Length: 478
Image 1 (cartoon, rainbow, N blue to C red):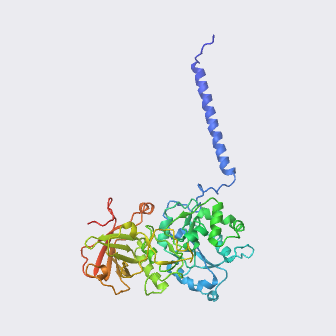
Image 2: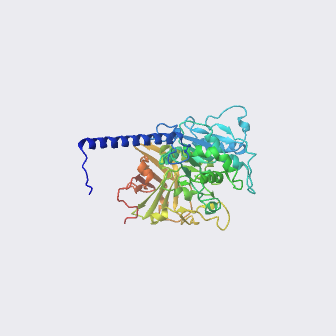
Image 3: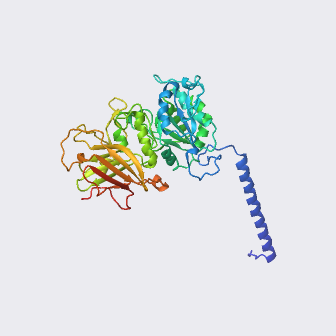
């Protein structure tokens, strides 16, 4: 019979030492293997999980305008007029980037440089690229290559590349705030669709429309630029530049991250309804300024936009943010689109209906589906005497710890009314503190509340905007 033999103390210590030596040697071998794998393995920077921007030492610092490079697509013929739109938002000595033209415009041939505008860059030759879309324009290839040519400018300390057209206007502070939500070391393609169902159906719901502007994070843009020319050769049949960018990003497996503050503005005519019911997100961009009416009455398009930017200078994050409150005495419904307009309905309108976009605009495409849009809407009342009253921003000023915005009516209809009607109101004053968008408000936005002040009397209404209480509901309280 075999019995279990207990080892002596000397044998036991010897066995322990051998085991420890084996463990140490095994760990040492694993460390050598790991180091060799990192340094000798093929370059795998294409994996978005680890594609951080190594040029930026302080990845945790706050994103600002210094971290953004712009690529603006234009052409020689349109630049002379549309540069007035770029002047509205471009901040000299604070922004980097280029306006890309196919050749230098005559106005620049004398060598003088307009310091209020971004520098002009001349696009590379694209005559060797095929373009087969019938009825389209081959310049779409040149415009698409603005992406790779902007990356090739080789700016330092870049987190985001932002692209747009010469008639795209940006709100820089809100652009920065929106992008700051995202980790710029990861692969991001950020923008928005068209508002038009027909446009989205024809092009793609996964494509960021170029006129609205879109952003690509630094590591993704670098990878995209390396193979972009070879990629667009596979898509000669596509119509536009943004379709080519989308296709090449799709080949990398990257989808669109939608941000509702970007606006393609595929409308004609009066876009009041859209601006007065802006999403509860910072206003980032607007497009097609020449296709829509001036956003303020009795002004040119540029003057109207200057008026909006003046309000944004006082409180950029609050611009166009909608706040709704109710006058309990008369059962009026009041909707403030800050820095733009105040609507007063002479009846109780539930909040979800006020949030709907009023169909004040004309469709981008005249077809049986052209009037279909991808947002909630309500009908436009054709009878001005049954329509809500609209008071447009007149002026704005700073007071102690708050701003005071004055809104006035710009039209006058011959309608019968009594003293219980809001038609007696000639002026609306809106008081608010400066909106601070911290990370919580950016990631989980909540609409602000407002009060019709008891000081309201006669032909003037005063409204105060404030943060809602934790359990506060926005509805008509009788």
